[in-house]
Amino acid sequence: MSILPSLLAVLACVCFVSCQSEEEIKRERYITEGILVYKGNCANCHQTKGQGLAALYPPIAKSDYLVNKNKVICLIRYGQQGKIRVNGKQYNRPMPAHPQLSDLEIAEVVTYIYNQWGGEKKVTDVKSVAPVLEQCRTELSNATMK
Ligand code: HEC
Image (cartoon, rainbow, N blue to C red; front, top):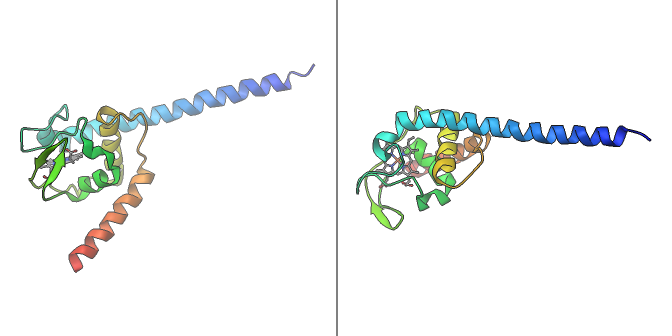
C-alpha cells in the first residue's frame, strides 16, 4: 500500500492551515496599524469609540454610510463637504482632507474601521485601495477644471 495519498492529504491540510493564518496575521497587522492612524488622525473628531460628537461629527461605529466603501476611502484622503445623512441624522460640516496619509495608511485605517464597526472580518488591501484613490483623484481634478 502506498502512503503517498495520505502524505499528500497531510500536506494539503498543513498548507491550508498556514495559508489561512497568514491572512489572519496580515489582518491583525493592518488593524494594529489602523488603530494608530485612527487615534492620530480621526479620534479627536469621531471619538475613540467611533461614536461621533453630538450634531458636529457623525458616528463611524455602525454608520450606514459604511456601505459605500469606495466613498469612505475617498473622503479620508480628499475630505468631504456639504450635507450628509448618517443613520437618519443630518450633518453638515466640512471634514478636512488627509493628504499626508499614504495609500497603505488609508487601507489600514479602513480595515480597522470595517473590522471594528462595520461587521467585516477581512483585510481591505492596499492593492484594492490604490486604484480607488486614483479614480477619485482624476474625478476630482476633472470637476475642478470645469
Ligand atoms: C476635524 C474633524 C474630523 C476629522 C479629523 C476626521 N473627520 Fe471624518 N468627518 C467629519 C465630519 C464633519 C464629517 C461629515 C461631513 C459632512 O457633513 O459633509 C465626517 C464624515 C466621515 C465619514 C462618513 C460619515 C460617517 O460618519 O460614517 C467617515 C467614514 C469618516 N468621516 C471617517 C474619518 C476618518 C477615518 C478619519 C481619520 C483619517 C476622519 N474621518 C477624520 C469630521 C472629521
